[in-house]
Length: 226
Image (cartoon, rainbow, N blue to C red):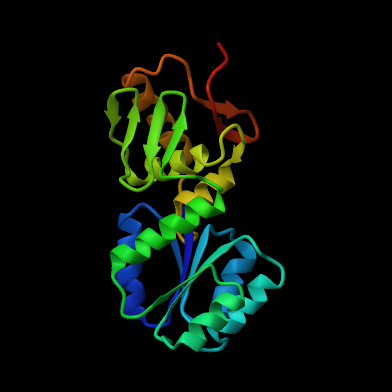
């Protein structure tokens, strides 16, 4: 999943970014409202974590600008503004959730996970494709009764594909959702990770391919024809 973290306090931004990265999310960071809007205009995000007390452009103005043309991107306000009036205003302007500082990281991650499920109209934490199961909360993956050990990037790629079953995911989409925008990747990096996932599925007992390479377009996941 791809997250834009908008926080002007660099130390707090570092802490939150490290935590979310350890959870398997791809993170871009902006330190003021103007930079946040620049990122938003060029990169699709699953969730935006937005501080309000920002330089250059206030967080509420960032929220207004996004909501003028985009009702779907999930936005979680993370702010020291804790008055009821501030929380109500943020939610009325279109934020999907509001968490006040100081906060517990586990609660932040749980709220992001909930917003991700809502974004994909997904009920519950478990995604399935045939005998393949992926638990977004516990981050456990299994094929039948066999547990699979995936790297963080492999989990992110598989999770995004399973949230969009039967749809062709372009290479750019998968890279956007599994890596940060500032990472310099080798051309075959995604191909290598897809190959590794396929190999682990085979080792777990998958007899027919679940992940298909759609030539010239990208990849999709779905049960193979019998």
